Length: 108
Image 1 (cartoon, rainbow, N blue to C red):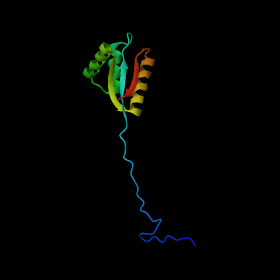
Image 2 (cartoon, rainbow, N blue to C red):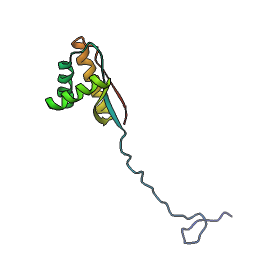
Image 3 (tube, helix red, strand yellow):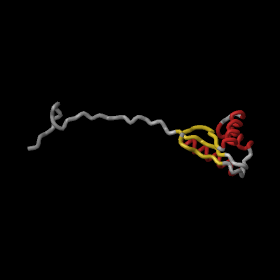
Image 4 (cartoon, helix red, strand yellow):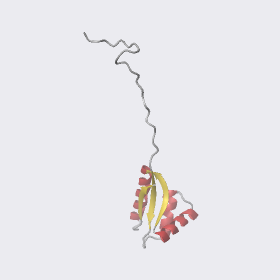
C-alpha cells in the first residue's frame, strides 16, 4: 500500500512554499542626441530644443552651439519610450520644414 502524506511535521513530501518577489528593475535610460549638419538653420535648432525639450532660450542656444561646434549634443536623458517619442517629434518637425536635421538616441 502507498504511504499517505498527512501533513504532519517530519512526514516525507511536506515542505514550505516560499515566494520570492522579483525586485522592480529601474528602466534603462537613453540620451537623445542632435547631430550637426551644414544646412539646418541655428534658429530652427533652438526652436526644436525649446519646443520638444522645454529648454529656455539660453539653454537651447548653449546646446545648439555645442552641437554646432562638437558635431553632436545631448538634448536630454529619458526612458526609452519618451526618448523614442522625442526623436520622432524632432525628425517629423525637421522633415516638415525641409531641414536635414538628424536626431537619434543611445543608451545612457
